[in-house]
Image (cartoon, rainbow, N blue to C red; front, side):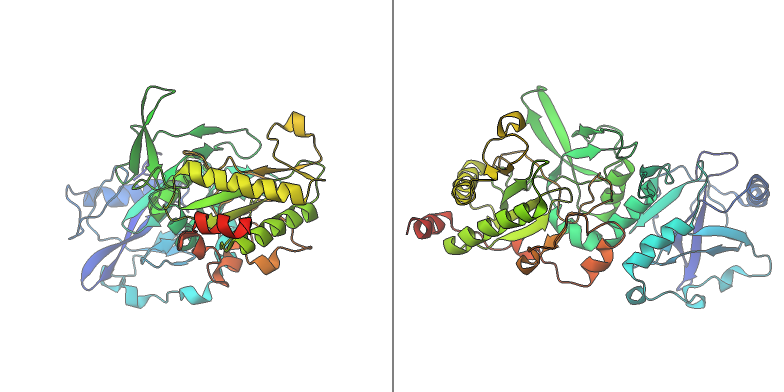
Length: 433
């Protein structure tokens, strides 16, 4: 498969239960001499039909050959779905028989012994040429990551490939917060130093495995097909488009007019310090506790904090927004010196924190929990225990380099956001008292 001279990559397979099993793509490890040698070696073995007994989904044009040649590759690990991570071609093994290429003949790395930090670090060790390709194997689907060596975070030396690998490593955690939610795609294909652009329509070029949800747009007078990210393959596809951060709707396609949660975005100006942001978050926690509402906090991945209150599709956006406005009004009266409800930056000045309740509108999006942000430091929007929201907390302490390891060592702190609904009426009664 591939588009460069001779071939782009080799499909790798092993024998399991006397059947051939796809093990991944080896797109690196070749020079021009190797490419030509392997191409000539495989030419006499070309056949029309796939050698696999079961259907194998491949996204590229494939030239099938008889499985007669054994090669040696190096790789980072066996993935959970029995694929090779980062396979790199080493050499042809004429001394080996195809019957020896079995799963049992290998010594797979147990996933429990592979630290997420090590998995991310391994990306740095595989240096690809600009014309070489990298694939994410997500179940039966292989997704190409084009230009994997493109640097997205220049100061932090984080590449496009590393971004894709990060999301695959935390997919189990982030996918529940993306499932069945239209994505407003913020694309930075040239990295964080480029302003990027928003993209909503899946378009005709989206592969077959991409799911979408049609929404009629009054402004553009047409239906827009929003991408739905329910699996690792779609996650990789979005990363390949240049999506460093992920921005899902607050509601799902089944109940698009009823959000699953209320959000309050604590958005500081440039003259506010993070201790003031922490104080503001704890003021909201105090009021929500008095109202009898569960609340959850996460770093924005930038300069602020986000507070979520579960709603579980019980109310419409307008009701949820009005409740958020009430809470913001109360907190602003508690801390008038450095908080405001004034959205316009010129009017509020650069010394006050904006209490943003307008996030609770239909179609509004905000960076997902566990999402990377296109900021220096390659920061991550990380869920927090409320006991962690205190002096000493900084927004830049969670990054692509440590987030996966931190996430794997703690329970999903944010799980309750998708839990039982808050009763706004009961909250109002308690606050009135």
